[in-house]
Image 1 (cartoon, rainbow, N blue to C red):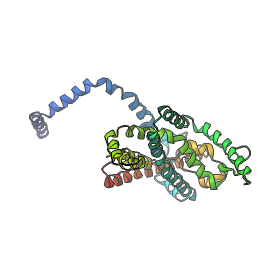
Image 2: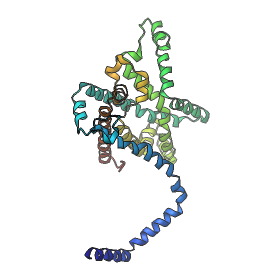
Image 3: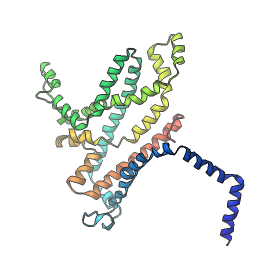
Image 4: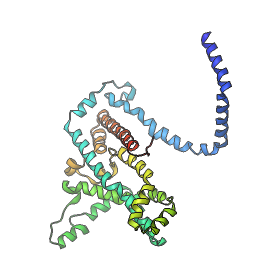
Amino acid sequence: MDTFNNIKRNIIINKKLGLFNFNKDLFKKYYRYRYFLLMLLPGLIHYIIFKYGPIYGVIIAFKDYRLVDGILASPWVGLKHFKIMFGTSDVWQVFKNTLIISTYKLIFGFPAPIILALLINEVQNIHFKKTIQTISYMPHFLSWVVLSGLLINFLSPSTGPINNLLRALGRQPIFFVADPRYFRAVLVISSIWKEVGWGTIVYLASISNVDIQLYESAVLDGASKFKQAIYITLPSIAPVIVIMLIFAVGGIVNDDFDQIFNLYSPVVYRVADVFSTYVYRMGLENALYSFSTAAGLFKNVIAFILIIITNYIARKLSEYSLW
């Protein structure tokens, strides 16, 4: 009875404070923009089915999963697969390779679209500008299956133009995609080549919003194009750069499976095997489903921690962050 009286008293207080009116106004807004909200449905359904739905399968990392028993009926084993994973040297080598390759891509790949966007922005001839943009975008629309075939032929020790040039200079040919000394460089350079043009879209859109009067004032003060880029363009697009950097650091352990899987071979496993390829080999080739799920879950936990740390540092060092 006391509980009922408390609820009744809270309703009366909320009516006096106008809280119910707020909810009524909110529903009116939802109804007014119902068609815009309806456009969110396909995206929400996609995320629910393909992103959040599969999370349910993560529990097999804590089970001895058997196909005949299914996910729910398989026995629980706690942290058994994580203990096995951390007790093997393969996982630490894979972790090391993932960090090294992703760090190289971050160091050399992250500034590349920013630099290209600054250069494209300075091109005055509109036709030349569009041609550069189109050529730089094209590799993004090709799959790694196609690009890997092109790269392997281009770097072939027998017929590739690079090795033909080396032979013409009196040097020995190099099998780049099968030599551990060069394989990581091939990954980084080919990754930049594929995505640099696509990455410029965001930065070019940001640059287009910079106040033109700032450039006019800088020209009157005698600032060169380089100084305009350093002191006007880059500070103006700093919020976008910070947000993109947080996403890039968060994805540092989300190695590019398609690229590495289509380019690597057993002779370069020592320097090329990363989490995604390791999980694939353990899960699908060796049928160690629970073990590979544990490895994948470990990778995602690391990615989540990196996002939190990067966002915290970005918030401390600047006024821009995700939250």
